[in-house]
Amino acid sequence: MKILAIDGSTRQSGYTAKALDLILDEAEGMGHDVERARLSDLSFEDCRGCRDCHRTGGCVVDDDMGGVLKSVKESDHIIMASPIYMGSETGVFKCFLDRLYSLLSPMEGGGFESRLPPGKAATVMLVCGSPEGHIVYHYLTNRYTSIIKGLLGMEDFNAFIVPGTSKLDSVDDSVTLQQNLETVKERLC
Ligand SMILES: Cc1cc2nc3c(=O)[nH]c(=O)nc-3n(C[C@H](O)[C@H](O)[C@H](O)COP(=O)(O)O)c2cc1C
Image (tube, rainbow, N blue to C red; front, top):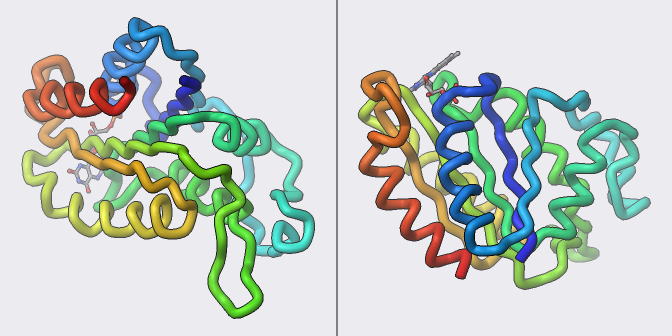
């Protein structure tokens, strides 16, 4: 299985990166082909809103996001991770989400259909400082479900939050992450 991990953290060795390390070590141990895209290391623009993708079938902006979008198309399971900043995802992660718009094709009667091949799975991991992670979790998960499952057609979708990093010395100490790691492993089988 080809796995693409999107790291939306702005910190190279923060809790999000470490949590992704744990997940991806397991995935590699299971023999999967793993690619990791650290959004903060890449150079890419915001979506221009030009909608040229409707006509051309892909994003016309020539930057590093082109390679990420290609990998999204080619991967079987996309793991997307972002810290919570001000009650939402980081700016780079939001920019990535906006650029996924180019993977949607407008339908004649209205609405969109996905340009992605069927059968892909997706996992979203949100990481936040507050132990009260559930406050943002429900709002964000509803949004991600409608984007990733509803619009992009990745039916096999799961999201979880790793709360309380402000009180953790290491993400290895997160009980929530350990529990969700088991679910991720089952879904990668
Ligand atoms: C600019 C900024 C805004 C943040 N906003 C929130 C927030 O709204 N809610 C929350 O629980 N944590 C918030 N945090 C804490 C981060 O979510 C937390 O430190 C997380 O572990 C950061 O991810 P990282 O360790 O991968 O850098 C914020 C942190 C920063 C730097």
